[in-house]
Amino acid sequence: MSTPALQTMLAGLALAVWIYLMLGRGGFWRAQRQLDRGTLEGAPAAGLHWPAVVAVVPARNEVDMLPQSLASLLAQDYPGPFHVVLVDDHSDDGTARAALELGARHPGRLSVLPAAALAPGWTGKLWAVSQGVASVESSASPPEFLLLTDADIGYEPDALTSLVRRAEAGGCALVSLMARLRCASLAERALVPAFIFFFQMLYPFAWVNRSDRRTTAAAGGCMLVRRRALAAAGGIASIRGALIDDCALGARLKQQGPVWLGLTERVRSLRPYPHFGDIRRMVARSAYAQLRYSPWRLAGTVAGLSLAYLAAPVIAIAGAAPSQSMAIAAWLLMALCFWPTLRFYGRSPLWAPLLPAIAAVYLGFTLDSAWQHARGRGGMWKGRAQALGPSPPALSSKEVD
Image (cartoon, rainbow, N blue to C red; front, side):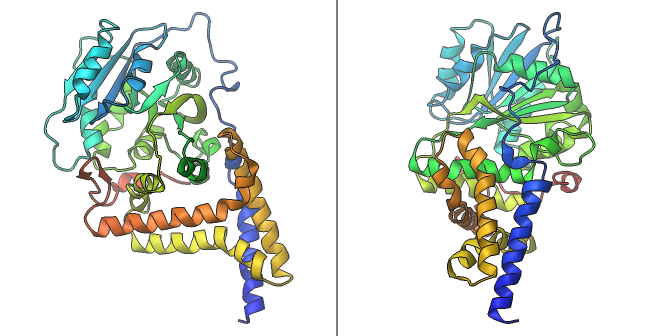
């Protein structure tokens, strides 16, 4: 095939990809599914029974986060019974002591549970979560809902109330909110909006929220789970080795009832990523797990991302007609799709044409994830290499449509 013919073919394919993504992928790029903006019309308010909720917070060396994250949980204005269980995952920085000091300001609302030694076959976070859930299950009056959240997540005072209203209105087994990530440093401004954009592209929220679609996902920082549905799904033990535990749990729970996933400004990640290397480590921790540790899926991802994100700008800059015109059109559609997520994060539209370069950075992070796994350092987090192998078979057919 001649070079002009090859350019025309690649440009045409790239344009077709972005036409499909814009028109046929659940409108993921619109960034509209927000609990803050009118998604609760029809949800009962007056006379609503407010069920008991217990938040389970795994924490490993989080003393710097707790004054904001745990304090915001303890300050929830939820009108029903609410309690917080923090599981101290072998911290050596005074996490448990700091939690108890914060809990003293809200008598009776916090319990601190020391984690047992990490059991074989478990990731550290899920082992801590499982012990928190077990302590709740063994209580005299187990709650209707569990709020599974991270120690670096901050909540507006009415966030839990909104979550419960959403769950009760839809009879949901799971309601999850994609916490708004920090977007302050140069690295965060350059890479964070794209991280959310790519997640929405993989798991269109409109499809996740439809019972007639197999697509399912969740955002691990904030997951309100119906306790009986979790038990019926096999509990936390059913996903004990999963690095991408939120999507794994979403897959289990969608078999038990409706799930709902949305964007929000009322739940925020407090974790700073000041340098590009910090974001690289965050992505590399689980990117290869997303590909189920498959070299073939990795090769397909490299080819697919190169076609979707890199071919169009290269041909637009260095190609010739008619391929150049198609490439420019694909690049324009790409930028238009990215703009709503940039707007959600308060970023300038001038970042939109840079999505191909940003995608190339993430492609590099994915390759690094595979390399770290080959070195035996997969899933590295706070001194633990947690990549244990492929995801359980039961998840493979349920994560994406």
